[in-house]
Image 1 (tube, each protein chain N blue to C red):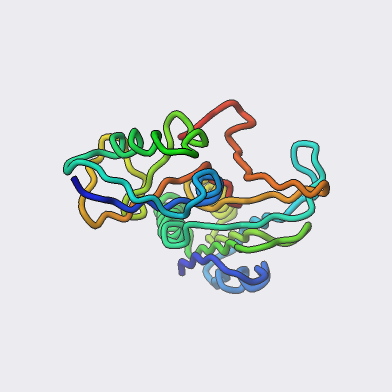
Image 2 (cartoon, rainbow over the protein chains, first blue to last red; image 1 turned 135 degrees about the horizontal axis):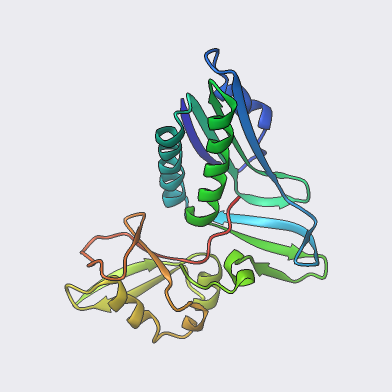
Length: 146
Length: 81
């Protein structure tokens, strides 16, 4: 089973977990990303996620296919939420099932790292002082472009 | 010459004040040629040295040639997850 989706509703980790469970598998690994209240020392009040939806879907499908190929997971799923999220809301859930723990854990890690560099999703961070800014993860490491 | 439509998102859409750009380029132009044209427009200061471009929903190299009907987008720094 392979499932990638972008949704405009709450993401429920339990639902994603159920979707990947497989009686052949002794390990299910899950990553849950949530909105935190501070970034770069500034108080965050919320995040607006937006995407180039058609390409984001295609990239997420491709990443899951690569994860299957590399780690041999029996089933794998990712759900990414778009729209306005509040502090503590779940933005992404990734779950992978394998007979053994190591490939399950590696696959989950692989998917989140790939999502962060190649899926066209953007976040507009809202701060407590009323200012909002587009987040550029590379800016903080001195890297520009790609 | 032909006209291509370039989709803009997030910080790029904000900087250009548009969600799409119509750009005239000579037939046989590459991604690099297209970026050079876009750099002449107001709002282009937002672009990094090597902006990422997607053609038909895949990241494209600067030397990739553009064809009629290609779906083209400028991809700002991504921040999913």
